[in-house]
Length: 293
Length: 293
DNA sequence: AAGTGGTCTAGACCACTTT
DNA sequence: AAGTGGTCTAGACCACTTC
Image (spheres, rainbow over the protein chains, first blue to last red):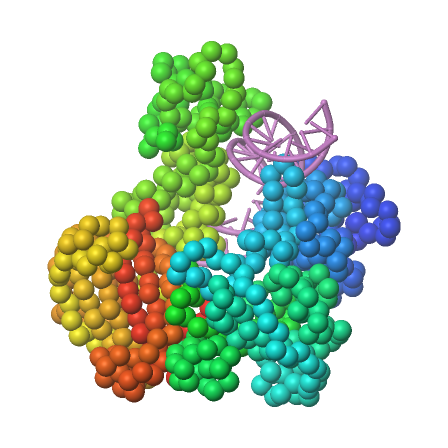
Protein backbone atom coordinates (compact mmCIF):
# COMPACT_ATOMS: atom_id res chain seq x y z
CA UNK A 1 0.00 0.00 0.00
CA UNK A 2 0.93 2.83 0.12
CA UNK A 3 1.56 5.87 0.67
CA UNK A 4 2.71 8.04 -1.35
CA UNK A 5 2.98 11.33 -0.63
CA UNK A 6 2.33 14.13 -2.53
CA UNK A 7 5.78 14.27 -2.41
CA UNK A 8 7.85 15.65 -4.72
CA UNK A 9 9.16 17.36 -1.94
CA UNK A 10 11.16 14.57 -0.90
CA UNK A 11 14.01 16.34 -2.40
CA UNK A 12 13.85 19.17 -0.01
CA UNK A 13 13.50 17.70 3.38
CA UNK A 14 15.56 14.66 3.77
CA UNK A 15 18.88 16.13 3.36
CA UNK A 16 19.79 14.94 6.76
CA UNK A 17 18.19 11.69 7.66
CA UNK A 18 18.68 11.78 11.35
CA UNK A 19 18.66 15.33 12.28
CA UNK A 20 15.28 16.69 12.04
CA UNK A 21 16.64 20.10 11.62
CA UNK A 22 16.35 20.19 7.95
CA UNK A 23 13.90 22.87 7.27
CA UNK A 24 13.28 22.74 3.63
CA UNK A 25 12.93 26.20 2.46
CA UNK A 26 15.31 27.55 4.98
CA UNK A 27 12.91 29.90 6.39
CA UNK A 28 11.65 31.71 3.45
CA UNK A 29 8.07 30.86 3.89
CA UNK A 30 5.76 33.30 2.32
CA UNK A 31 2.24 32.93 3.46
CA UNK A 32 1.69 30.17 1.11
CA UNK A 33 4.53 27.99 0.33
CA UNK A 34 3.90 24.32 0.10
CA UNK A 35 5.48 22.81 3.12
CA UNK A 36 5.89 19.33 2.11
CA UNK A 37 8.29 18.46 4.77
CA UNK A 38 6.55 15.25 5.38
CA UNK A 39 8.95 12.72 6.70
CA UNK A 40 7.54 10.21 4.42
CA UNK A 41 8.41 6.67 4.73
CA UNK A 42 10.52 5.09 2.15
CA UNK A 43 11.72 7.77 -0.09
CA UNK A 44 11.23 5.56 -2.98
CA UNK A 45 7.88 6.71 -4.13
CA UNK A 46 7.07 5.62 -7.57
CA UNK A 47 7.89 8.47 -9.78
CA UNK A 48 10.94 9.46 -7.93
CA UNK A 49 11.93 11.60 -10.70
CA UNK A 50 10.45 14.78 -11.56
CA UNK A 51 8.21 17.09 -10.03
CA UNK A 52 4.95 16.52 -11.53
CA UNK A 53 2.89 19.28 -10.25
CA UNK A 54 0.15 17.25 -11.69
CA UNK A 55 -2.00 15.91 -8.90
CA UNK A 56 -0.77 12.42 -8.46
CA UNK A 57 -3.43 9.80 -8.98
CA UNK A 58 -2.86 8.52 -5.48
CA UNK A 59 -3.30 11.78 -3.71
CA UNK A 60 -3.47 11.71 0.03
CA UNK A 61 -3.90 14.75 2.23
CA UNK A 62 -1.09 15.57 4.57
CA UNK A 63 -3.17 14.99 7.67
CA UNK A 64 -4.00 11.49 6.46
CA UNK A 65 -0.34 10.75 6.12
CA UNK A 66 0.26 12.07 9.62
CA UNK A 67 -2.62 9.97 10.85
CA UNK A 68 -1.02 6.90 9.30
CA UNK A 69 2.28 7.69 10.96
CA UNK A 70 0.65 8.10 14.35
CA UNK A 71 -1.29 4.88 13.86
CA UNK A 72 1.94 3.11 13.08
CA UNK A 73 3.41 4.31 16.35
CA UNK A 74 0.33 3.11 18.20
CA UNK A 75 0.57 -0.25 16.53
CA UNK A 76 4.28 -0.63 17.21
CA UNK A 77 3.70 0.05 20.87
CA UNK A 78 5.67 3.26 20.99
CA UNK A 79 2.76 4.62 22.99
CA UNK A 80 0.96 1.95 24.99
CA UNK A 81 -2.70 1.72 25.96
CA UNK A 82 -3.46 4.15 28.75
CA UNK A 83 -0.39 6.26 28.07
CA UNK A 84 -0.34 9.81 26.85
CA UNK A 85 0.90 10.47 23.37
CA UNK A 86 3.06 13.51 22.65
CA UNK A 87 1.32 16.85 22.62
CA UNK A 88 0.08 18.35 19.41
CA UNK A 89 2.92 20.80 19.39
CA UNK A 90 5.48 18.06 19.79
CA UNK A 91 3.99 15.99 17.04
CA UNK A 92 3.77 19.02 14.79
CA UNK A 93 7.43 19.61 15.38
CA UNK A 94 8.33 15.97 14.89
CA UNK A 95 6.53 15.71 11.58
CA UNK A 96 7.30 19.22 10.48
CA UNK A 97 3.75 20.24 9.90
CA UNK A 98 1.49 22.77 11.56
CA UNK A 99 -0.38 22.05 14.75
CA UNK A 100 -3.64 22.30 12.86
CA UNK A 101 -2.70 19.44 10.61
CA UNK A 102 -1.76 17.23 13.55
CA UNK A 103 -5.01 18.24 15.17
CA UNK A 104 -7.03 17.07 12.23
CA UNK A 105 -5.21 13.75 12.19
CA UNK A 106 -5.85 13.24 15.89
CA UNK A 107 -9.47 14.28 15.41
CA UNK A 108 -9.99 11.30 13.17
CA UNK A 109 -8.14 8.94 15.45
CA UNK A 110 -10.31 10.11 18.32
CA UNK A 111 -13.43 9.61 16.22
CA UNK A 112 -12.31 6.03 15.64
CA UNK A 113 -11.73 5.61 19.35
CA UNK A 114 -8.05 4.84 18.98
CA UNK A 115 -7.17 7.74 21.24
CA UNK A 116 -9.12 10.00 23.57
CA UNK A 117 -8.49 13.68 24.20
CA UNK A 118 -8.70 15.16 27.65
CA UNK A 119 -8.62 18.90 27.82
CA UNK A 120 -5.79 20.25 29.89
CA UNK A 121 -4.21 16.85 30.28
CA UNK A 122 -3.31 15.44 26.92
CA UNK A 123 -4.29 12.81 24.39
CA UNK A 124 -4.30 9.21 25.59
CA UNK A 125 -4.24 5.84 23.97
CA UNK A 126 -7.57 4.21 24.71
CA UNK A 127 -7.66 0.93 26.56
CA UNK A 128 -10.15 -1.83 27.16
CA UNK A 129 -9.75 -1.21 30.87
CA UNK A 130 -11.88 1.91 30.64
CA UNK A 131 -15.58 1.59 31.17
CA UNK A 132 -16.38 3.60 28.11
CA UNK A 133 -14.51 1.23 25.90
CA UNK A 134 -15.71 -1.89 27.65
CA UNK A 135 -19.32 -1.32 26.81
CA UNK A 136 -18.61 -0.56 23.19
CA UNK A 137 -18.11 -4.28 22.77
CA UNK A 138 -20.66 -5.57 25.24
CA UNK A 139 -24.09 -4.54 24.08
CA UNK A 140 -26.14 -6.77 26.33
CA UNK A 141 -28.07 -4.62 28.78
CA UNK A 142 -30.23 -5.84 31.66
CA UNK A 143 -33.91 -4.88 31.68
CA UNK A 144 -33.42 -3.60 35.18
CA UNK A 145 -30.36 -1.99 36.61
CA UNK A 146 -27.09 -0.83 35.18
CA UNK A 147 -24.96 -2.60 32.59
CA UNK A 148 -22.34 -4.68 34.31
CA UNK A 149 -19.76 -7.30 33.63
CA UNK A 150 -20.65 -10.79 34.70
CA UNK A 151 -18.49 -13.58 35.96
CA UNK A 152 -16.88 -15.73 33.32
CA UNK A 153 -16.62 -19.50 33.62
CA UNK A 154 -14.13 -20.94 31.20
CA UNK A 155 -15.16 -24.35 29.93
CA UNK A 156 -12.32 -24.95 27.58
CA UNK A 157 -9.22 -23.38 26.08
CA UNK A 158 -7.18 -25.32 23.60
CA UNK A 159 -5.12 -24.99 20.47
CA UNK A 160 -6.35 -26.62 17.34
CA UNK A 161 -6.26 -26.33 13.61
CA UNK A 162 -8.63 -23.90 12.03
CA UNK A 163 -11.72 -25.34 10.38
CA UNK A 164 -12.37 -24.03 6.90
CA UNK A 165 -14.96 -21.45 7.79
CA UNK A 166 -13.06 -20.00 10.73
CA UNK A 167 -9.95 -19.84 8.60
CA UNK A 168 -11.81 -17.97 5.93
CA UNK A 169 -13.08 -15.40 8.39
CA UNK A 170 -9.65 -14.98 9.96
CA UNK A 171 -8.02 -14.73 6.57
CA UNK A 172 -5.67 -17.63 7.26
CA UNK A 173 -5.37 -21.10 5.79
CA UNK A 174 -7.43 -24.05 6.83
CA UNK A 175 -5.44 -26.00 9.34
CA UNK A 176 -3.44 -23.03 10.60
CA UNK A 177 -3.16 -22.81 14.37
CA UNK A 178 -5.95 -21.15 16.33
CA UNK A 179 -6.92 -21.01 19.99
CA UNK A 180 -10.43 -22.03 20.84
CA UNK A 181 -12.16 -20.88 23.98
CA UNK A 182 -15.56 -21.79 25.28
CA UNK A 183 -17.06 -19.99 28.23
CA UNK A 184 -20.26 -19.03 29.97
CA UNK A 185 -20.98 -15.52 31.20
CA UNK A 186 -23.01 -15.19 34.33
CA UNK A 187 -25.10 -12.07 34.91
CA UNK A 188 -26.73 -11.63 38.29
CA UNK A 189 -26.48 -15.29 39.01
CA UNK A 190 -27.94 -16.41 35.72
CA UNK A 191 -26.08 -18.06 32.89
CA UNK A 192 -26.73 -15.62 30.10
CA UNK A 193 -24.10 -15.95 27.41
CA UNK A 194 -22.41 -18.97 25.88
CA UNK A 195 -19.38 -17.92 23.88
CA UNK A 196 -17.28 -19.91 21.47
CA UNK A 197 -14.16 -18.00 20.50
CA UNK A 198 -11.40 -18.56 17.98
CA UNK A 199 -8.22 -16.53 18.14
CA UNK A 200 -5.36 -16.26 15.71
CA UNK A 201 -2.84 -18.80 16.98
CA UNK A 202 0.15 -16.67 16.12
CA UNK A 203 -0.99 -13.79 18.30
CA UNK A 204 -1.95 -15.75 21.38
CA UNK A 205 0.86 -18.09 22.22
CA UNK A 206 0.73 -19.07 25.86
CA UNK A 207 -2.94 -18.37 26.44
CA UNK A 208 -4.32 -20.95 28.85
CA UNK A 209 -7.54 -21.65 30.68
CA UNK A 210 -5.77 -20.74 33.90
CA UNK A 211 -4.82 -17.30 32.65
CA UNK A 212 -8.35 -16.72 31.51
CA UNK A 213 -9.82 -17.89 34.78
CA UNK A 214 -7.49 -15.86 36.93
CA UNK A 215 -8.12 -12.69 34.97
CA UNK A 216 -10.80 -10.53 36.44
CA UNK A 217 -12.18 -8.12 33.94
CA UNK A 218 -12.92 -7.95 30.26
CA UNK A 219 -11.19 -10.53 28.11
CA UNK A 220 -10.13 -7.87 25.64
CA UNK A 221 -8.25 -6.10 28.41
CA UNK A 222 -6.26 -9.28 28.97
CA UNK A 223 -5.54 -9.62 25.28
CA UNK A 224 -4.36 -6.07 25.13
CA UNK A 225 -2.23 -6.22 28.26
CA UNK A 226 -0.72 -9.68 27.91
CA UNK A 227 -0.68 -10.36 24.22
CA UNK A 228 -0.32 -6.95 22.70
CA UNK A 229 -3.36 -7.46 20.54
CA UNK A 230 -5.86 -4.67 20.66
CA UNK A 231 -9.36 -5.04 19.28
CA UNK A 232 -10.21 -1.94 17.36
CA UNK A 233 -13.52 -2.69 15.77
CA UNK A 234 -15.86 -5.60 15.16
CA UNK A 235 -18.61 -6.63 12.81
CA UNK A 236 -21.57 -8.67 13.99
CA UNK A 237 -24.25 -10.76 12.34
CA UNK A 238 -27.26 -11.31 14.54
CA UNK A 239 -29.96 -13.93 14.29
CA UNK A 240 -32.56 -15.67 16.38
CA UNK A 241 -31.88 -19.41 16.71
CA UNK A 242 -33.28 -22.31 18.73
CA UNK A 243 -31.19 -23.65 21.60
CA UNK A 244 -29.53 -26.95 20.82
CA UNK A 245 -28.97 -29.53 23.51
CA UNK A 246 -25.59 -28.24 24.62
CA UNK A 247 -26.64 -24.62 24.78
CA UNK A 248 -29.87 -25.51 26.53
CA UNK A 249 -28.03 -27.32 29.27
CA UNK A 250 -25.30 -24.74 29.80
CA UNK A 251 -27.72 -21.84 29.79
CA UNK A 252 -30.48 -23.62 31.70
CA UNK A 253 -33.17 -23.08 29.11
CA UNK A 254 -35.40 -25.56 27.30
CA UNK A 255 -34.15 -27.10 24.10
CA UNK A 256 -35.48 -25.13 21.16
CA UNK A 257 -36.07 -21.94 23.06
CA UNK A 258 -35.07 -18.78 21.19
CA UNK A 259 -31.54 -17.48 21.68
CA UNK A 260 -29.82 -14.51 20.14
CA UNK A 261 -26.93 -15.67 17.99
CA UNK A 262 -24.19 -13.09 17.60
CA UNK A 263 -21.39 -13.90 15.19
CA UNK A 264 -18.58 -11.45 15.58
CA UNK A 265 -15.35 -10.88 13.70
CA UNK A 266 -12.96 -8.56 15.51
CA UNK A 267 -10.20 -6.59 13.89
CA UNK A 268 -6.98 -5.06 15.10
CA UNK A 269 -4.82 -2.39 13.48
CA UNK A 270 -4.74 -2.48 9.74
CA UNK A 271 -8.14 -4.12 9.68
CA UNK A 272 -6.63 -7.50 10.26
CA UNK A 273 -9.11 -10.02 11.68
CA UNK A 274 -7.83 -11.71 14.84
CA UNK A 275 -10.92 -13.14 16.49
CA UNK A 276 -14.08 -14.94 15.52
CA UNK A 277 -16.69 -15.27 18.20
CA UNK A 278 -20.06 -16.90 18.27
CA UNK A 279 -22.21 -15.94 21.21
CA UNK A 280 -25.59 -17.29 22.24
CA UNK A 281 -27.47 -14.85 24.43
CA UNK A 282 -30.46 -15.50 26.64
CA UNK A 283 -32.63 -12.45 26.14
CA UNK A 284 -35.28 -13.04 28.74
CA UNK A 285 -34.03 -10.42 31.16
CA UNK A 286 -31.48 -8.71 28.91
CA UNK A 287 -31.56 -7.13 25.50
CA UNK A 288 -29.03 -6.20 22.84
CA UNK A 289 -28.84 -2.44 22.64
CA UNK A 290 -28.16 -0.71 19.35
CA UNK A 291 -28.32 2.86 18.19
CA UNK A 292 -28.89 3.86 14.60
CA UNK A 293 -27.58 7.23 13.71
CA UNK B 1 -29.98 29.40 27.89
CA UNK B 2 -28.93 32.27 26.10
CA UNK B 3 -27.42 31.88 22.87
CA UNK B 4 -27.12 33.57 19.65
CA UNK B 5 -30.12 35.43 18.55
CA UNK B 6 -31.34 34.39 15.27
CA UNK B 7 -29.56 37.12 13.81
CA UNK B 8 -30.04 40.70 14.08
CA UNK B 9 -26.84 41.08 12.58
CA UNK B 10 -27.30 44.72 12.60
CA UNK B 11 -26.62 44.76 16.24
CA UNK B 12 -23.02 44.26 15.60
CA UNK B 13 -22.67 47.60 14.06
CA UNK B 14 -20.24 49.58 16.00
CA UNK B 15 -21.78 52.22 18.03
CA UNK B 16 -24.96 50.39 18.48
CA UNK B 17 -26.08 51.40 21.90
CA UNK B 18 -27.23 48.22 23.35
CA UNK B 19 -24.67 46.01 21.88
CA UNK B 20 -22.34 45.47 24.67
CA UNK B 21 -19.00 44.36 23.59
CA UNK B 22 -19.37 41.62 26.07
CA UNK B 23 -18.76 38.43 24.33
CA UNK B 24 -19.25 35.86 26.97
CA UNK B 25 -16.93 33.14 26.26
CA UNK B 26 -16.47 33.04 22.65
CA UNK B 27 -14.17 35.75 21.80
CA UNK B 28 -11.00 35.31 19.99
CA UNK B 29 -10.52 38.32 17.92
CA UNK B 30 -7.35 38.89 16.13
CA UNK B 31 -5.37 41.72 17.47
CA UNK B 32 -6.67 44.20 15.05
CA UNK B 33 -10.22 43.17 14.83
CA UNK B 34 -12.95 45.71 15.26
CA UNK B 35 -15.51 45.35 17.96
CA UNK B 36 -16.84 41.93 18.22
CA UNK B 37 -18.78 41.16 15.13
CA UNK B 38 -20.46 38.42 16.98
CA UNK B 39 -24.14 39.07 17.20
CA UNK B 40 -24.16 38.24 20.82
CA UNK B 41 -27.06 37.68 22.97
CA UNK B 42 -27.66 40.30 25.32
CA UNK B 43 -27.27 41.46 28.53
CA UNK B 44 -26.82 39.07 31.19
CA UNK B 45 -23.20 38.66 31.89
CA UNK B 46 -23.03 38.59 35.56
CA UNK B 47 -20.45 40.90 36.92
CA UNK B 48 -21.12 44.03 35.04
CA UNK B 49 -18.30 45.55 36.82
CA UNK B 50 -14.82 45.15 35.73
CA UNK B 51 -13.49 42.91 33.18
CA UNK B 52 -14.10 39.63 34.71
CA UNK B 53 -13.73 37.33 31.88
CA UNK B 54 -15.35 34.76 34.05
CA UNK B 55 -16.75 32.13 31.76
CA UNK B 56 -20.45 32.20 31.98
CA UNK B 57 -21.90 29.07 33.48
CA UNK B 58 -23.72 28.32 30.30
CA UNK B 59 -20.77 28.54 28.03
CA UNK B 60 -21.25 27.32 24.52
CA UNK B 61 -18.70 27.55 21.75
CA UNK B 62 -19.60 29.78 18.87
CA UNK B 63 -19.64 26.93 16.39
CA UNK B 64 -22.16 25.08 18.55
CA UNK B 65 -24.42 28.08 18.48
CA UNK B 66 -24.05 28.28 14.72
CA UNK B 67 -24.80 24.59 14.52
CA UNK B 68 -27.97 25.14 16.52
CA UNK B 69 -29.03 27.94 14.19
CA UNK B 70 -28.46 25.80 11.12
CA UNK B 71 -30.35 22.94 12.73
CA UNK B 72 -33.24 25.27 13.39
CA UNK B 73 -33.35 26.22 9.73
CA UNK B 74 -33.32 22.57 8.76
CA UNK B 75 -36.12 21.86 11.16
CA UNK B 76 -38.21 24.79 10.01
CA UNK B 77 -37.92 23.62 6.45
CA UNK B 78 -36.01 26.63 5.21
CA UNK B 79 -33.82 24.12 3.42
CA UNK B 80 -35.66 20.96 2.48
CA UNK B 81 -34.38 17.41 2.19
CA UNK B 82 -32.33 17.00 -0.97
CA UNK B 83 -31.74 20.71 -1.35
CA UNK B 84 -28.44 22.49 -1.07
CA UNK B 85 -27.87 24.72 1.89
CA UNK B 86 -26.06 28.04 1.47
CA UNK B 87 -22.33 27.85 0.93
CA UNK B 88 -19.96 28.17 3.84
CA UNK B 89 -19.07 31.67 2.79
CA UNK B 90 -22.69 32.72 2.68
CA UNK B 91 -23.40 31.27 6.06
CA UNK B 92 -20.29 32.86 7.49
CA UNK B 93 -21.51 36.16 6.20
CA UNK B 94 -25.02 35.63 7.47
CA UNK B 95 -23.94 34.75 10.96
CA UNK B 96 -21.02 37.14 11.00
CA UNK B 97 -18.44 34.56 11.85
CA UNK B 98 -15.48 33.16 10.00
CA UNK B 99 -15.77 30.44 7.43
CA UNK B 100 -13.78 28.15 9.69
CA UNK B 101 -16.38 28.38 12.40
CA UNK B 102 -19.19 27.57 10.00
CA UNK B 103 -17.12 24.71 8.71
CA UNK B 104 -16.79 23.21 12.14
CA UNK B 105 -20.52 23.49 12.72
CA UNK B 106 -21.25 21.78 9.42
CA UNK B 107 -18.64 19.14 10.19
CA UNK B 108 -20.68 18.05 13.15
CA UNK B 109 -23.95 18.15 11.27
CA UNK B 110 -22.38 15.99 8.59
CA UNK B 111 -21.10 13.57 11.23
CA UNK B 112 -24.67 13.28 12.49
CA UNK B 113 -25.89 12.66 8.97
CA UNK B 114 -28.14 15.69 8.92
CA UNK B 115 -26.33 17.07 5.90
CA UNK B 116 -23.84 15.67 3.41
CA UNK B 117 -20.99 17.53 1.79
CA UNK B 118 -20.13 17.07 -1.84
CA UNK B 119 -16.91 18.59 -2.95
CA UNK B 120 -17.28 21.09 -5.70
CA UNK B 121 -21.06 21.04 -5.49
CA UNK B 122 -22.18 22.13 -2.07
CA UNK B 123 -23.66 20.85 1.15
CA UNK B 124 -27.01 19.09 0.91
CA UNK B 125 -29.75 18.20 3.31
CA UNK B 126 -29.80 14.42 3.56
CA UNK B 127 -32.93 12.57 2.61
CA UNK B 128 -34.35 9.10 3.12
CA UNK B 129 -34.55 8.77 -0.64
CA UNK B 130 -30.82 8.21 -0.86
CA UNK B 131 -29.51 4.69 -0.69
CA UNK B 132 -26.92 5.56 1.86
CA UNK B 133 -29.51 6.82 4.27
CA UNK B 134 -32.00 4.07 3.56
CA UNK B 135 -29.75 1.34 4.77
CA UNK B 136 -28.83 3.17 7.92
CA UNK B 137 -32.27 2.23 9.17
CA UNK B 138 -32.65 -1.17 7.55
CA UNK B 139 -30.04 -3.48 8.93
CA UNK B 140 -31.45 -6.72 7.64
CA UNK B 141 -29.07 -8.18 5.08
CA UNK B 142 -29.63 -11.29 2.96
CA UNK B 143 -27.15 -14.17 3.29
CA UNK B 144 -26.78 -14.08 -0.46
CA UNK B 145 -26.94 -11.10 -2.69
CA UNK B 146 -27.15 -7.40 -2.14
CA UNK B 147 -29.25 -5.57 0.43
CA UNK B 148 -32.52 -4.52 -1.09
CA UNK B 149 -35.87 -3.12 -0.21
CA UNK B 150 -38.72 -5.57 -0.24
CA UNK B 151 -42.33 -5.09 -1.06
CA UNK B 152 -44.55 -3.87 1.75
CA UNK B 153 -48.02 -5.25 2.34
CA UNK B 154 -50.05 -3.01 4.62
CA UNK B 155 -52.38 -4.98 6.85
CA UNK B 156 -53.82 -2.13 8.79
CA UNK B 157 -53.60 1.60 9.35
CA UNK B 158 -55.82 3.23 11.88
CA UNK B 159 -55.97 5.97 14.47
CA UNK B 160 -56.36 4.99 18.05
CA UNK B 161 -55.59 6.13 21.53
CA UNK B 162 -52.13 5.39 22.81
CA UNK B 163 -51.78 2.50 25.23
CA UNK B 164 -49.79 3.31 28.34
CA UNK B 165 -46.50 1.84 27.26
CA UNK B 166 -46.52 3.36 23.79
CA UNK B 167 -47.44 6.70 25.29
CA UNK B 168 -44.55 6.47 27.69
CA UNK B 169 -42.09 5.76 24.89
CA UNK B 170 -43.48 8.57 22.75
CA UNK B 171 -43.47 10.95 25.67
CA UNK B 172 -47.17 11.70 25.36
CA UNK B 173 -50.15 10.94 27.58
CA UNK B 174 -51.98 7.67 27.65
CA UNK B 175 -54.99 8.05 25.41
CA UNK B 176 -53.46 10.67 23.16
CA UNK B 177 -53.95 10.07 19.46
CA UNK B 178 -51.57 7.78 17.61
CA UNK B 179 -51.58 6.08 14.23
CA UNK B 180 -51.06 2.37 14.23
CA UNK B 181 -49.75 0.52 11.20
CA UNK B 182 -49.23 -3.17 10.72
CA UNK B 183 -47.45 -4.49 7.69
CA UNK B 184 -45.43 -7.37 6.30
CA UNK B 185 -42.22 -6.91 4.36
CA UNK B 186 -41.49 -9.32 1.60
CA UNK B 187 -37.91 -10.07 0.59
CA UNK B 188 -37.31 -12.17 -2.50
CA UNK B 189 -40.77 -13.58 -2.32
CA UNK B 190 -40.59 -14.51 1.33
CA UNK B 191 -42.44 -12.82 4.16
CA UNK B 192 -39.56 -11.73 6.31
CA UNK B 193 -40.61 -8.88 8.57
CA UNK B 194 -43.79 -8.22 10.52
CA UNK B 195 -43.91 -4.63 11.69
CA UNK B 196 -46.21 -2.98 14.16
CA UNK B 197 -45.77 0.76 14.13
CA UNK B 198 -47.11 3.60 16.24
CA UNK B 199 -46.75 7.18 15.10
CA UNK B 200 -47.40 10.42 16.89
CA UNK B 201 -50.96 11.31 15.90
CA UNK B 202 -50.29 15.02 15.74
CA UNK B 203 -47.59 14.62 13.12
CA UNK B 204 -49.37 12.22 10.81
CA UNK B 205 -52.82 13.56 10.15
CA UNK B 206 -54.17 12.14 6.94
CA UNK B 207 -52.00 9.05 6.80
CA UNK B 208 -54.04 6.20 5.35
CA UNK B 209 -53.51 2.62 4.26
CA UNK B 210 -54.00 3.76 0.68
CA UNK B 211 -51.21 6.28 0.87
CA UNK B 212 -48.95 3.69 2.38
CA UNK B 213 -49.82 1.12 -0.24
CA UNK B 214 -49.40 3.45 -3.16
CA UNK B 215 -46.04 4.64 -1.98
CA UNK B 216 -43.17 2.77 -3.47
CA UNK B 217 -40.03 3.14 -1.46
CA UNK B 218 -38.97 3.48 2.13
CA UNK B 219 -41.69 4.49 4.54
CA UNK B 220 -39.44 7.11 6.06
CA UNK B 221 -39.14 8.79 2.69
CA UNK B 222 -42.92 9.14 2.64
CA UNK B 223 -42.97 10.55 6.14
CA UNK B 224 -40.32 13.06 5.21
CA UNK B 225 -41.91 14.10 1.92
CA UNK B 226 -45.57 14.13 2.89
CA UNK B 227 -45.62 14.81 6.58
CA UNK B 228 -42.51 16.87 7.12
CA UNK B 229 -41.30 14.51 9.79
CA UNK B 230 -37.74 13.39 9.37
CA UNK B 231 -36.29 10.50 11.33
CA UNK B 232 -32.86 11.46 12.54
CA UNK B 233 -31.81 8.63 14.78
CA UNK B 234 -33.24 5.57 16.44
CA UNK B 235 -32.56 3.31 19.37
CA UNK B 236 -33.25 -0.41 19.22
CA UNK B 237 -33.62 -3.20 21.73
CA UNK B 238 -33.11 -6.61 20.24
CA UNK B 239 -34.18 -9.98 21.55
CA UNK B 240 -34.89 -13.50 20.38
CA UNK B 241 -38.53 -14.48 20.88
CA UNK B 242 -40.78 -17.38 19.89
CA UNK B 243 -43.34 -16.79 17.13
CA UNK B 244 -46.88 -16.45 18.42
CA UNK B 245 -49.84 -17.65 16.41
CA UNK B 246 -50.36 -14.42 14.50
CA UNK B 247 -46.73 -13.95 13.62
CA UNK B 248 -46.34 -17.57 12.66
CA UNK B 249 -49.18 -17.34 10.22
CA UNK B 250 -48.20 -14.05 8.65
CA UNK B 251 -44.56 -15.03 8.31
CA UNK B 252 -45.20 -18.63 7.36
CA UNK B 253 -43.12 -20.13 10.12
CA UNK B 254 -44.04 -22.66 12.80
CA UNK B 255 -45.44 -21.40 16.05
CA UNK B 256 -42.68 -21.07 18.59
CA UNK B 257 -39.88 -20.76 16.08
CA UNK B 258 -37.25 -18.15 16.93
CA UNK B 259 -37.76 -14.62 15.61
CA UNK B 260 -35.67 -11.54 16.05
CA UNK B 261 -37.64 -8.93 17.96
CA UNK B 262 -36.53 -5.38 17.26
CA UNK B 263 -38.11 -2.64 19.34
CA UNK B 264 -37.26 0.72 17.91
CA UNK B 265 -37.91 4.26 19.06
CA UNK B 266 -37.19 6.85 16.38
CA UNK B 267 -36.43 10.49 17.01
CA UNK B 268 -36.71 13.63 14.97
CA UNK B 269 -35.07 17.01 15.50
CA UNK B 270 -34.60 17.98 19.08
CA UNK B 271 -34.52 14.34 20.08
CA UNK B 272 -38.29 14.17 20.13
CA UNK B 273 -39.60 10.61 19.79
CA UNK B 274 -42.15 10.28 17.00
CA UNK B 275 -42.30 6.58 16.26
CA UNK B 276 -42.33 3.31 18.13
CA UNK B 277 -41.87 0.20 16.07
CA UNK B 278 -41.82 -3.44 16.92
CA UNK B 279 -40.49 -5.68 14.20
CA UNK B 280 -40.34 -9.44 14.09
CA UNK B 281 -37.68 -10.67 11.67
CA UNK B 282 -37.28 -14.12 10.19
CA UNK B 283 -33.54 -14.69 10.25
CA UNK B 284 -33.29 -17.92 8.32
CA UNK B 285 -31.91 -16.34 5.17
CA UNK B 286 -31.18 -12.86 6.49
CA UNK B 287 -29.22 -11.44 9.38
CA UNK B 288 -29.12 -8.20 11.30
CA UNK B 289 -25.85 -6.46 10.53
CA UNK B 290 -24.12 -4.37 13.14
CA UNK B 291 -20.71 -2.78 13.39
CA UNK B 292 -19.02 -2.00 16.66
CA UNK B 293 -16.47 0.73 16.47
C1' DA C 1 2.79 29.79 35.96
C1' DA C 2 3.16 26.39 32.62
C1' DG C 3 1.36 23.01 29.62
C1' DT C 4 -2.40 20.79 27.09
C1' DG C 5 -6.32 20.61 24.28
C1' DG C 6 -10.31 23.78 22.44
C1' DT C 7 -11.97 27.76 19.82
C1' DC C 8 -11.63 31.40 16.44
C1' DT C 9 -9.85 33.96 12.75
C1' DA C 10 -7.67 35.14 8.20
C1' DG C 11 -5.71 33.99 4.13
C1' DA C 12 -3.75 30.99 0.61
C1' DC C 13 -3.97 27.32 -2.37
C1' DC C 14 -5.87 22.68 -4.03
C1' DA C 15 -9.41 19.56 -6.00
C1' DC C 16 -13.80 18.94 -7.92
C1' DT C 17 -17.93 20.38 -10.46
C1' DT C 18 -20.38 23.26 -13.42
C1' DT C 19 -20.74 27.05 -16.72
C1' DA D 1 -13.67 30.95 -15.29
C1' DA D 2 -16.29 30.76 -11.31
C1' DG D 3 -18.02 28.56 -7.30
C1' DT D 4 -17.91 25.02 -3.73
C1' DG D 5 -15.90 22.19 -0.36
C1' DG D 6 -11.02 20.42 1.27
C1' DT D 7 -6.38 21.23 3.01
C1' DC D 8 -2.81 23.80 5.29
C1' DT D 9 -0.74 27.37 7.81
C1' DA D 10 0.05 30.92 11.48
C1' DG D 11 -1.21 33.22 15.35
C1' DA D 12 -4.19 34.60 19.17
C1' DC D 13 -6.82 33.68 23.02
C1' DC D 14 -9.75 30.57 26.12
C1' DA D 15 -10.63 26.66 29.35
C1' DC D 16 -8.90 23.00 32.02
C1' DT D 17 -5.40 20.58 34.71
C1' DT D 18 -1.31 20.31 37.25
C1' DC D 19 2.66 22.14 39.56
